[in-house]
Length: 349
Ligand code: GLN
Image (tube, rainbow, N blue to C red):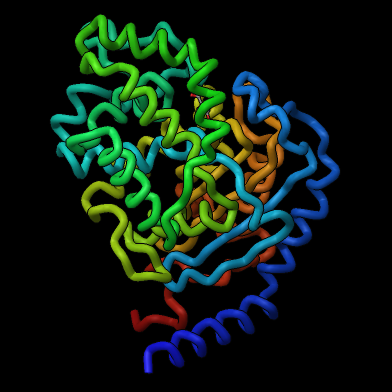
């Protein structure tokens, strides 16, 4: 009886979560970083300005089992904003293939702010990468669907496969950004001028704004990150959200470009693919092991969540998660999920 076995699975996961030391670590970090009061809530999208700077949630999900660990406001909904970008890029790759996408958007970090308007590749006029607004707008234009509604439905279906439920768009945030997004509109028209966007600029922008206005929780984002960590398959539903061959493309641009003009420092210190959004979300992927997400609205000067960066940095350091780390975690700290291929008992020579 599948229902009964899934109930038992949920019960076992619940018990393991309750007794896990990892849950205590997340609660401890939540407690210690709650007092950080640096950063400012984004207000250039008027509807975001009402966010409470005290909101703070952390969630982590296992890549193999979807087991969830949470602390604080992990069930509070907020808009995904730029964290949509890698997922939209993944769908564009599936819809068009790598070569066609590469004609419209590159994979080079810019070292510029997320909303930089000036930097298009001089020769090709392509935006540098799909993680900055120019690249994400170009990527949104590549999504297949006969009508605007069909494209939006495909976008929401795609998010639904990662999350395990179809999300909604926050219409107030969408309208707010649509009304005030002059800079993104200027970027889009510059792309149109160079023949990098089709003439239906307003439709493309709407789809981009709608993607940014998708409502998620830290819990949802952790599951989305865990799905990427699990080779594109949602660990709880077993549904494939992204074709396996494109997972490395998405993770690569997240690694090099996901944190905007902080991407180099992030790669150096945290050493994991990540993406942030101006509503205060940050996701980080530990390939083969887990996805994590932090939600805390106050942002630093790069547009990244202050507490989100701090928590991810601390988790990476404590558990030795940097992708180039060859030393074990200092105090032997272990994630609840072993590293892929890690020996659990001594191997024969
Ligand atoms: N919707 C936002 C914008 O286009 C996304 C930016 C972000 O999250 N960094 O400005």
